[in-house]
Length: 300
Image 1 (cartoon, rainbow, N blue to C red):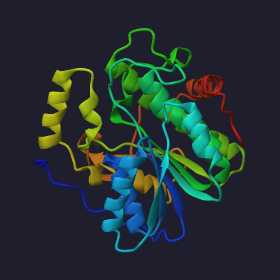
Image 2 (cartoon, one colour):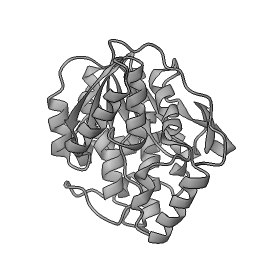
Image 3 (cartoon, rainbow, N blue to C red):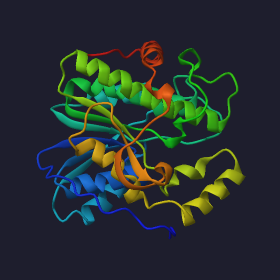
């Protein structure tokens, strides 16, 4: 049980009649986001890599939803562009909001099925492709989950595989900075196209999830497990910035996170980001490279 007090509960508006896609919805922040959206009346498509685990999570949500909203489970592997395209190709009808929540953190070195550096390929390029493929259906909001750890090594759009100085931490930091630069350029394009859709970013602060258990270093896993016990907020609290970004009347390109203790804890609200996360030239170049790497282009 964390030693520090939790932030006040977040009250969502009535979401009856709305539809959301939440990636990585079977556990952690994604599961808690799904619970809250369903409780407010939304229909949530739980986009998960393992449909079996997704169905188990959906049953948990249904058991506590008091008949408010609803869920369905669909397969999505962000580390496989064929899976991303299949998910998007099967979509029909309007989509109120897309929550790009899924991610991996500080894993051993690896590659996606398309040959991308594993963390950048999953956390950024998979969501980049998914967002652009679904964007013609989106009516209100795209929210991408980043991290406080975007403040780190600079991102080189022409070295997205992090071939220079790769480490589990550096690759994760690059992927989370890429998330923010993606939102920066996505919202700019939406505004230029006259679209009513807004793109925002969020981060959970320090939330206790299974994400920290996959670090390549056993020492780091042990240290993070201790941090989860004494410092981290529950996953439900960590999901609040994403939920606020997804449902509140906030300007595009807003970054939402905990507002106390340096962004680690507290009630969610607009927060700052690193200077490079606001670098429009880097964001534009990242977009161009992401289109080249994924073969997915701006649809509006």
